[in-house]
Length: 376
Ligand code: AOF
Ligand code: ZN
Image (tube, rainbow, N blue to C red; front, side):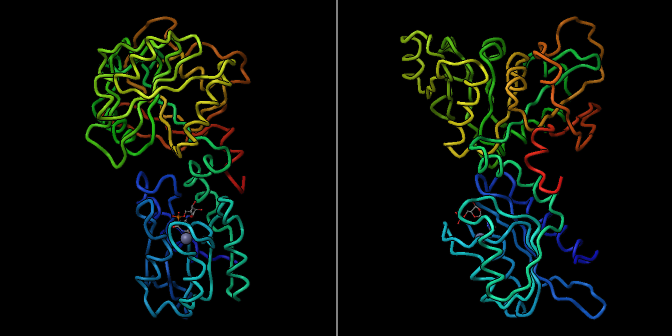
């Protein structure tokens, strides 16, 4: 049903989709290509599009607009099922049909309840040839954070840490400074600039007094979140001092002293109260709160105890591990142990880079692989 020319056209659509990263969330990244096939079977691209900004036109509309009247009889390659609902923009299916497209190739279905197969059905009803599943794995992976938000009501969680060659963890940003290369730290700031939230524990917040802002600024301003059950975050900390310029959320426990909570609130911090429950339930509940705020990506920066809690709760979807080529020779500086070996999820490494002489391993956990790879 698909030939290598089709695959090349869809690969291009996926490449275009990526341009929306950090700009379209909580919407999915989507790319589209309109193409005319010649006698030899080659596709000639006559229109390209991508979803560029939240609330802006969808990928198909941009690609059809670029193609103009030549779209009549052409094929459309799109990385996500075209929408069939009136959201912030009218249904893409109507525009595809009106443009006279004859064949629609879709990489992956849209899990969004207002679409969920309805887009495919609408196109088929109108007599278009619809084929689904080309580069589906890639397209599903690209939209994994969006799918996590739609399917599980929580953001995609990226756990990041830096460590030495012998596995000593940097306990926070001050250790990062000597452990990771400037190029590694630049990558972290780029990541910070395209996500919705950055989370640290109170230990890191007190020890490092971090600012947790993207520097330079990116396309989004992440919410800075501190897990602080006792409301110990100092009013003099950089986080609290800048809370009115860049938002801070302090996640406190039921046992937090009321005066401390009130003082943080008065200083401009937003407060979230954890339910009386065990640690994994509390974390899940915080993740659901972020989901209600439509957060699509959360970066967990540590320290070790917080990373361990997220792994223990099965809440890590992606890892970024920076390994500095140094031997530290200190004991007991890795992650605190997980309760059982089974709690340590296998991680599929997707990418290996060498920023500034470090090693950067990026991968996804098996749990997320099972729920997000449609074809796996
Ligand atoms: C498409 N093409 O490029 C995108 C789609 O609020 P709206 O109007 O922007 O609609 C958002 C929903 O539309 C989003 O949740 C997802 O289901 C779909 N996104 N669909 O056909 C696109 N970005
Ligand atoms: Zn649409």
